[in-house]
Length: 525
Image 1 (cartoon, one colour):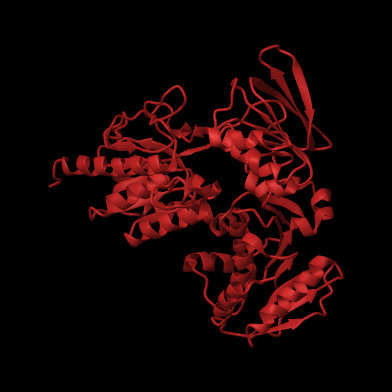
Image 2 (cartoon, helix red, strand yellow):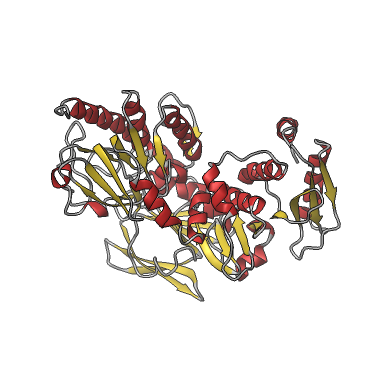
């Protein structure tokens, strides 16, 4: 199950355990149950601080709990935590065994302070797939919470091993989190986001904390490639730099294979995001995550600093501001899309694709993202129908040729999606109009993956800065916006060709422009 290299790596990690732990297994005779027994025996064989108890009686079989010695409570894994989730298993072992997590102490304190109003417990169930790159963040967050606070109970469920549950709960997107039997959330969530959602007073405390911060020389809004590059270039000038973002890495966190970032042969989005964050931290930049901006007030209006107002009520002040808010998936905006989101309508083929194994799906969009999605899905699902509005696919020729070579793919170009249909709370088909004949066709299927490009995250700037008709921030060759002292970079701007490396370059340029602006301002006496 684990090759020699992985065993050696795991043994090294288990050497960091500070206190004994035990694995309490509830097994059955299924293949997954046998594989789980083998995995647990392997772990026990690599450390004298780990013991195995196979007398578990949990209703979910096969499953096991990672618990401290002489305790029975801990993180429960139902199904095999391999693939992307192997790291989650390793961290659960380490944290339970006393190895400190790399989390700020105030976050740990917030977790410890959580207490249900009714005096009961927070019972979390998180459904994941082994190929999902968003799932580990959620799994690890909820695992940490269960280890730190006995009021938090966490069960991690591998959807492939518990298909009946997945179908009964109509789970068609991962990660999917239930709290006390009710849907809590879906998609990537950080531990800070989860805690804030449970702690109703967190927003007010955070707002006060933000407002107390000293003014920045350069304040960057957004933590994607553009924001990260801007932070590095600005901080290297020896000035005070801050980043306010919902999540560091931005859209990188939703991107898998990256093969066009110059000097890096191949990487993936989450790794690149982590590498960028480490570099930004190296320069002492003040990183503030989970922050959404509500408005920008110019220095002309305040009579001093530019003000960045946050949705939680906090206000940050800066001598200059760089906007790098990026973009998000564009919606098709047809009947059924919103209704069936996460019920057959999905946006990430890597995360949600395995949930549609053996089923029929459609991909809307014939650009690189859409064609890549169709190619990946074709290896998992029964059949893929690709819908493209233009009269030909816009993806790179190498991708188009590969797609056309696949036997279980049909391509409809010059086709307009008109409706996503469903029944019983789930998608059952897609309707499209042949733009050459105006004839409407209906395709029976179980899933629709939307891949039609991006829309800039600039709604909060309407009426404040000059925006293009597409909502992009209008910038000049040096990243200047229509507001003095405010610059912009990346996918949220009018700069053509939305690419990771281009965004990073634009962020660097915006930082240099901001510094040039600062040094030309009159000295404050």
